[in-house]
Length: 194
Image (cartoon, rainbow, N blue to C red; front, side, top):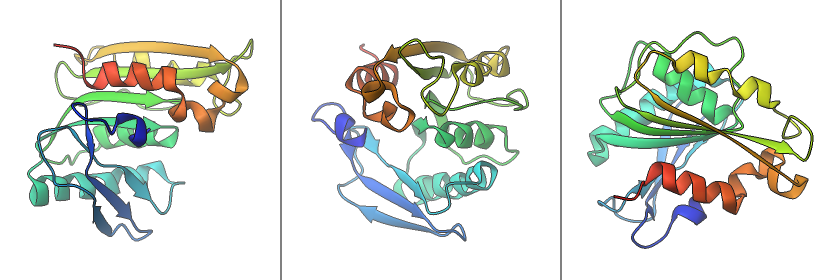
């Protein structure tokens, strides 16, 4: 997905944040941080504990703010990345950055508590994949993606849900974030035309 977004006049792949099991963050700089929508993938060494990763995301965002002067962000989370974003937003502690736009892809939200805090007027695009006539993407049922609508209700979130159905090679869970049609939706959500 970063490759799809890394285009002139759209965004620049600027940094990668690597988060160790212990939560230490190391940075790999590729380009200077500038106004061209810097892309910063976050790679968690331990990607199996979303609530721990939500706390680690706080560390990453604090460092982005302190080291690089980042004040506003758009976030994209695929699979557990979506629940990490959600759990971060429900944490008591937040980094001094404003989350403007959120895209979640194939993230499941069963048994989550309603969202307590979010930036007013935040835009949230929630995407689910379904393979053919099935109601899932081989791992995440669409029925576990859709509860997000109720969790963000009454919080000033501009929420949109899109289900993308197609053949397995376009809609299988691990391939969703590589799908060109979904990339186009994500680009429009993150960088809406003026």
